[in-house]
Amino acid sequence: MDTLKDTSIGTTVRIVKIHGTGAMKRRIMDMGLTRGCRVVIRKAAPMGDPLQLTVRGYELSLRKEDAAMIEVAPADSLNCVGQNCDGCSGCGCH
Image (spheres, helix red, strand yellow):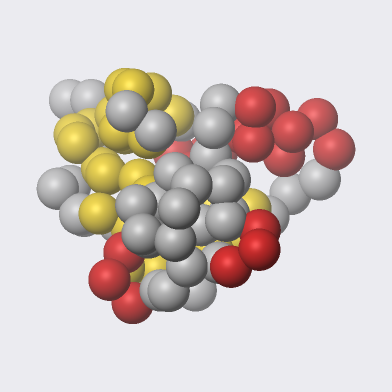
């Protein structure tokens, strides 16, 4: 399982699954990080934490602790998530 925490700077990925429960999972989803969404890892702070991401056209800083709960796959390896597609991934189905 690859996580957002382990992804290299400059890589574009799609979210496969968000692990965790309750308020923590809801907080991550409220930031716009949802299944199928495309994420670009822009840079990391000098000490490595937090990560700066581009998601849904805006910049987001995310702690590595939170990034470790987000399972990802390379953006080009996944097709549209179909009926649950939220349109953020640029899959062309809209």
